[in-house]
Image 1 (tube, rainbow, N blue to C red):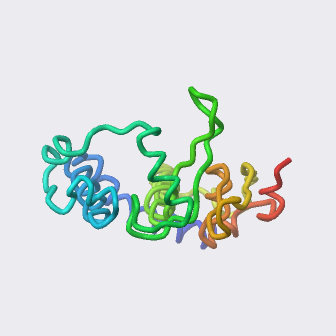
Image 2 (cartoon, rainbow, N blue to C red):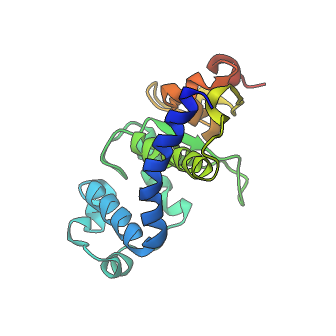
Length: 194
């Protein structure tokens, strides 16, 4: 096992303790996530509409905030795509994942914030690797290159700072340096439409 594999395996074992805690206390972990989201979004248009500043329990949240379908959220998302801030999230959202169409055959645009990329998508990748290295500590999995090809990526025609594309392309475009280092082909080739 080379030095890089030993370092990755060591870091994975440290991270595993947090994952183990979430697995053993899922309700507490979910309460913590919900409270963090509500706290961060309390001054947004959506958060003010549903009085997030006064929601402190899951029961209050369920009683106050109705279930929403995509069509209910579309007006908020369209405002965000037009460049308006603090609509659904308290930080700028410049990325929108474009669905390939669902029941009504129209694409849907899903806001993807910087926090979502880091705390969900990239963290999930790290957690999968953590579990793998926990089970196979002498693995050389990350010592070579991985073949990664994403979906289409294009600049949105609404405003220049807002971009949309397949989620896989958004993830590749924003992946951390170590993700870029381990991937082949280079990003410009991986994001070609065809």
